Length: 415
Image (cartoon, rainbow, N blue to C red):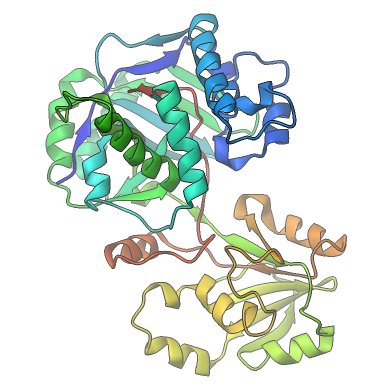
């Protein structure tokens, strides 16, 4: 059963929370991080992307980067300041985007639950990215990035959340430059026992976003155990910070695709080739309205693609949940056989565009010649994600885009 614990958060003062809070480290590159942190010495990017404060030619995975992160965290604790709560708490974290709200519980979760698949995964992790955050955690002795979890909502927990929102003053409440409103409350300690008890009845939690952060917390725990001769199992490094949201409140956006060339085909040859597996018609629509359908942008024209009956018949024989997803259909019946995109994880002829950027970004990339063709997909559902996790399968790469994102720096877990 799932273990959830209150914790002592390291967090900024109310006055400076909006200055400290930063976008997640892994949604921007070094240049973007440097630009976002410019003129703001309190930005948490100085901790999560500390290479921005080192020479441009520094290896972003070098020891110097992690030591700089530690130095910057210590400096931020003094300057922001960041204050460690006296007692462990649960916290509520609400995000509002375009009038749509989702509220989760910020807590620490068991690394054992992650290792033993009580907390289920749906993505593969890359060792280089694991190494990066593991070194960051061990050097700073802090988990600075928050994992995004979900679960099938529980009525009693939802009621406690709503009661807190309506009766307790928030610790932080601000709107970030991207228009997302971030609000955090301390959950009354009287509710702690019930929260722990309710989650103890839950057999499965799911990682929505933050697979590398969770895996790195597990690897950091291994290293901490080795260096601790009196390891007991209750040390802070045995737990990792996450915010867990009821699945019914979440929205998954599509993860669209652009391909840089037509694999040597002319426009006519390409359209003829894909017509073998898809019904292809010009359209004014830019986003598909249901599963098993796609929108494609090619040479200033949108097309509607619908998987033919032969494709659907082959899917009915497929036992794998993941192979029936739209991202797999596009990959297996178009991108690979027609455009030669064999492995989308490693092929440098394809790129992935988060749904938050909209179809205008797809049009721009094709119209300016950076891409030859773009594909707009129907979003994966939470049920799909959970069913794949339950089956022990892995999602195809770049299948889900969760928005809005949690901000780093508002709640940090020291280990």
